[in-house]
Amino acid sequence: MNTKSTVLQSIDLTNLQGDIRGGAISFLVAVPLCLGIALASGAPLFAGIIAGIVGGLVVGLVSRSAVSISGPEAGLIVVTLSAIQSLGSFPAFLLATCIAGLIQVGLGFARAGMVSNFFPSSVIKGMLAGIGIILIIKQLPHLVGYDADAAEGFALFQPGGFNIIEQLRMALGQFSGVAILIALTSFAVFYLWERPSFRQRAFAQNVPAALVVVVLGISINELVRLAFPQWALRGNHLVQLPVPESAAAFFQLFTLPDFSQWSNPLVYTSAVAIALVASLEALLAIEASDELDPLKRKTPANHELKAQGIGNLVSGMIGGIPLTSVIVRSSVSINAGARTKLAALIHGTLLLVCVVTLPTLLNKIPWASLAAILFVTGYKLARIEVFKAIFAEGTARFIPFVVTILAILLTDLLTGIGIGMVTGIFFILRAHYQNTHRVQTEWVSDIKRIHVSLGDHVSFLSKAKLVKLLKSIPDNAIVEIDGTQSSYIDSDVIVTIQNFGIAARQRNIQLIFLPSLATDQSPIYTSKELFNIHRRNGARLRSKPQVNTTSL
Image (cartoon, rainbow, N blue to C red; front, side, top):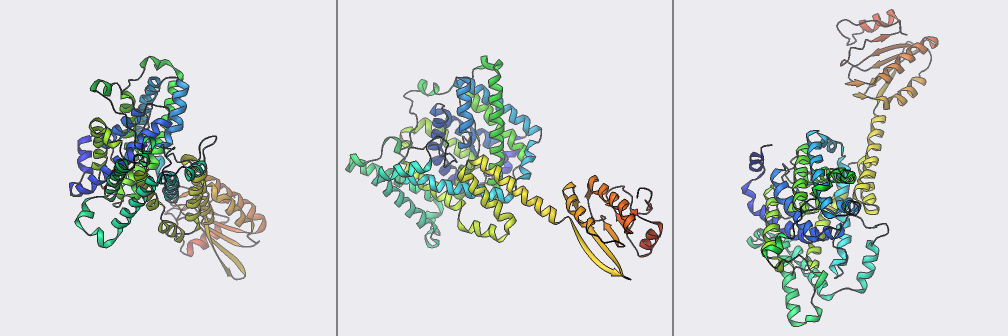
């Protein structure tokens, strides 16, 4: 794995300004999300920051994805929380995280990343739109000053938990005028930056709107704190980063794995669960990131599994929670102008530097400012133009797209994608069934001649429709089944045709079967006379065709 050449190939300094903007804005969004996910996972808060740093620097260095950014992700909350509870200690959980990283590296070498090739694009686009809608809905409480849910998980309705309906109801009774002012100001900034006349100015081209939003949010709240202290945002309305008082206190935030637990079977079951969920999340995220990439580059999935595994191994070794590729952070970075992996490295570097040197300043950022950034990101993922474009491609793509969105909204990310995949596969099989063969019919001297052209790939799924066709053929007909253009014909289909030839004798049906040229299967004729007639008519046969009448 030549890391140096990988980095050089993925970084183009001609887009330096865009990558700096993308890394900086994704960093601002990542800080509270790292903390919130760690809190919801039952882990120390700083463990989320560690995972964010490792995701940016380690995975960013090893990965070959140009635009993906890794870190702790809400989809891993459940598996992390259950693993910590079952193991009974955080150090034992860190050992499971390290083993999970090794498993992911093994999956990469086993080429398990090929699974990503089977994700229908309509499902990937539905996943992005579903995430966009959830981002929009889940920011509404933050925009009015109710900041109870800092994890930003992709589940609107959590069984037995605190769902979005309860949050919206409580937010209406606990809204903050300052948070609303910050939110409205933030939306005004984003609107101004989208105006063509303003966007052409040098200031708008060099300074991202999201950075202006954060600066204005801090400024407004600090001005209110000076003039009307009782109205200012504080506590969980602001970013809450751990602030160590000394170097010794800072290093105490790191935790080492408990290697004495290596013989505990629960460590390995937890590791397998973490590895599988993190790998699936990573594969889905890189597919989505590649879809958002303006340059439409393709990330090698197997190498990405290795990169994610190395990241989880390092994160577990120094006290971080599991990480994976994160769609929200990646999309925020892309929207800010990022085009190479330099944005991920900047993201990780800023996390490392700022948590060490500027934690007090970061703790002044209002949640309302970050919510406005995520709201706009969600809007760009789920804009109406996306729905129109998928609808224009036909129902076979639009229905899986919509089903994926609804399933994600009503369940969670992985379950919703699973339901969308099943729906997409149904339409693929339906199209395969409908395109099994083409039939042409003509009458020659009062004899019905039926020409059946088989499709390119004739699997066992084609058998039912072919059997239905053969049953409908009238007595005394001539049937020519042409498979010469097929790259594959399943043995069940060939046996079905052979059995039809045996039964056809009793009904005076004459059969010609020309198998795929890609196989050594001999043509089938019900008589020598039929073979000679077919040869005189110029049929495209092999150099030495055989008349197979004995099996019929």
